[in-house]
Length: 166
Image (cartoon, rainbow, N blue to C red):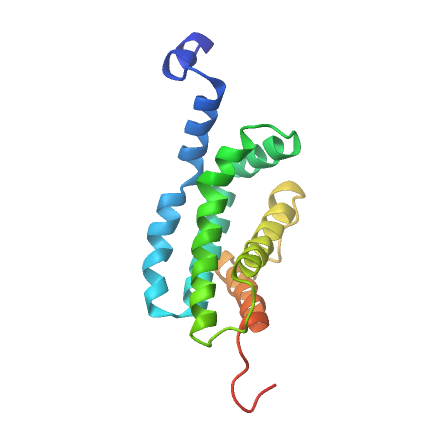
């Protein structure tokens, strides 16, 4: 494909980059998978499903993470569309869910947005180690088990202890 054909469809580099992000981010698909789970208030299922979706989609196409990191590290203006298209939407969903669970008394009085960032940070760190530094987890750790362990560690930190347990 020639450069002329590309610019026939995309008037600017930003338009092309935005189209690439929308195709790769798959945020709508992720949200369609996890949003219905929020009504059940099964914290482990919701967070494990979200973590698994993000890990599996990134492993299937690690170029999205590379595009994000390159644009952010270079201070490129096109990093903002990625933030809006994927990170912000997922962070808002997670922080709203955490806020509701704090209000219901299921979680300690944590800051919902900071807790959402912490959760997403655990997933991101795993993906950075795996995709950028080529650190492979032991073979017995499937993606599902990795997601469950991330979620267990996260929830153990924000859930209120059961009565009689400290």
